[in-house]
Length: 393
Image (cartoon, rainbow, N blue to C red; front, side):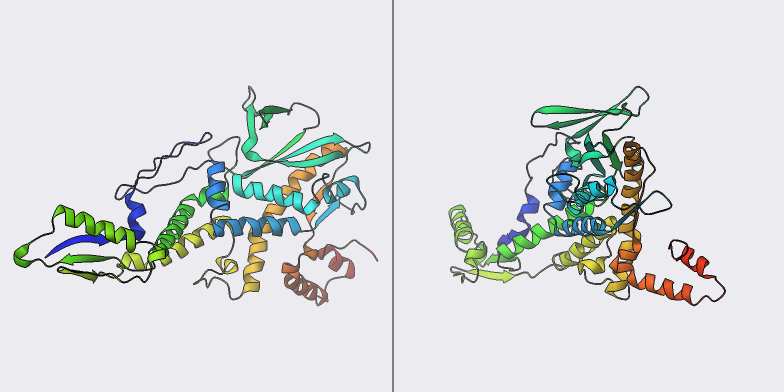
């Protein structure tokens, strides 16, 4: 008895050596797939965006959730003591340029921070009242920091359409605002959650390809064709090639799903079943999805991932998402915008999220109001200050 072939079509891709990929902006990572040698995708921002945001549903949803939530957070503008209504900066943030409204503009800024770890805002022109004429969110993959003699950025170069635009940072009014996430090993560029989640993204994408290959094989387990020849006889080379051609032509792929196999001349089919590693791929994929969500700071419950019992309910997970992920990001961006736009307008400006208008935090705010209102030992003025209300009235 001789085993002629083992059909494990959905793992065939793992035995092949894929084409090497080179990135113009990052290190080349070896793509060989020998036994025990994992294949990792390139780690530059462009490749991570393609493999993660464009090619992975979990990372796509995380980035969209964070960017959309942060852009929807209402911003209050003040001079530190009183609200500034109908201020030029307030109008600028509501409609930063002719092609975008405020929410769309801020969504692009937050999205760039999530994907690349850097975001760049250009101030174009200047109004008579001192505010920039327009604000534009520039693509981080096109921007390059030009360090000065002291190591700090002296200029930025933006490459687009075969030409370069230079932003000189030595001017009194900086034409560019560079927002970046903390990176312990880089002086000029930030570290994005996409980079931290890169390994989990590769695992999740590989599990998805494995699942697709399994479906292409009609979700059938691997097996073996066994030849029972008389007196230990074996198939000739010609018989072996004809058998393999027959199987590949008529019994491989989704289009041949369910087609019966005709075996003759002592041939027999022995299904081998799914191995334990085959059965665990779904758990591996789920674990990778959770790692991606954790890297971005999105509770897995909000993504519908199974097995998450961190929070008692969806509302609690949503509050944690806002408190731990969205609001710190909004405060970071609004704080940088405050300082930058203050230089342009010539007066102190304070931009901060208006927590009273965030629906996800309404229950917390209601509990705070009740606790303050029930505090009989506080005066009305003290209660107003604790609630962030103006004095008097």
